[in-house]
Picture 1 (spheres, each protein chain N blue to C red):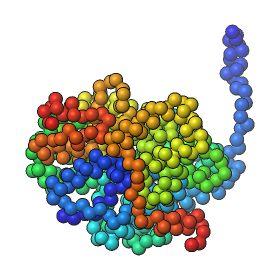
Picture 2 (picture 1 turned 30 degrees about the vertical axis):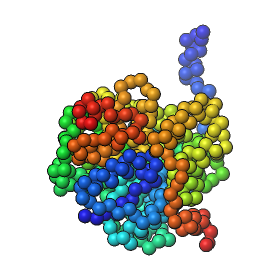
Picture 3 (picture 1 turned 180 degrees about the vertical axis):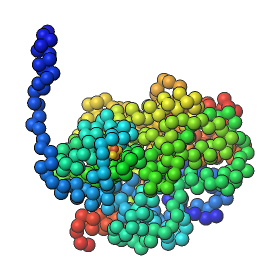
Picture 4 (picture 1 turned 90 degrees about the vertical axis):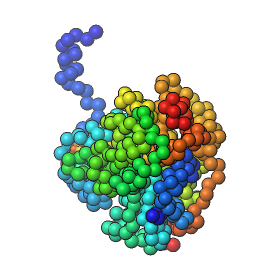
Length: 277
Length: 211
Ligand code: SF4
Ligand code: SF4
């Protein structure tokens, strides 16, 4: 199977760990990801905040490049996925003129939903060498992957299940909680610290109350927000995993602590007590 | 101490602090404009406040989301453009998702932010606006956004560094940045996309200039 891959800017920087684990997981599942030729930034929140036209035009360039490759797109980043889908809908409605040849006919998958399809889950289950027994997790989806439903196509946007299904396939114990899709504050913390902190702290508290030992995410921004705020705090730290990191761990009989060295909240201790490392 | 009578008097007759605003004196020009440009169903709002209750940051806003919708109906444009609301909003889409009348609250607020960005009004949450601006500047320079360059560019904007030092968060953020560099999560150099020329051209055209 072959798909075009739109990594997005974060995967070259803040989310290198995500990028590496995606690489390993898709190799193990025997799915070919071809990076979109000379991709460019989707514009994220900034583009649609300041110029709605550019928020359609910027992602369109990548859609156009992918169409030339003739491969459906898979996007690991929640925000990129949302922006690509939004742009695609606007292109289909012919609201704007796009400087590149583009029809908007390709499928755009978010990576979690792609891997949570029943055949994929079966494939994952077959591939698991060392089930993550006894690891108590909550899955956190954030906003952009699920909302607004008319763009993302999620029908279970109040209680999404994709990450839950994938995490369960690795053998971990997935706990239900009510804050799956509550906003983490995105980049607001950079300019307004107290707003960002209030949102992330609440999520961490609620995850602890639910009895989670770690949080599973799929969005680079959610990961950094939830991870970095715990730096130097005294309470019980709670590691934040990308779901692909867990997959990678369960796919190998001996994990490597080096995989997690980019994390602020070091999960190695936790994994060792569960004898998963 | 006030006597009871005095207390009651002050309750019964609040001193008019603000001049009362007229309602319905502006026609529906602004309402039609916003509905036309966003496709949002602003007239359908019946002020149930579900949007505000769903909003994770409404307590940081001076005009709450449901009020913002009413303001659009009333044509109170300048109040909206001067508000903190349009900058604090995270585009998390909770309001839009839970509105029973499919008003498209987030889309309206985002569009107001667009209008404000192209106006002479100084944003009430200047730093938030400057951050968006900086992001796009970095994007236009290299086609991709490198977080290291983004943060550097942001700190170099007028007053940002000064405020960070004054509030005492600068040292902490500097240390955080260094740790991120050491961990390899910040990369000093960007990979550029060859698309810069095309993107810059699109920007010039979006400004209404002919290339
Ligand atoms: S949820 Fe919709 S109908 Fe209710 S107040 Fe908000 S915009 Fe109006
Ligand atoms: S999109 Fe903005 S106004 Fe709507 S709920 Fe989210 S933060 Fe609040």
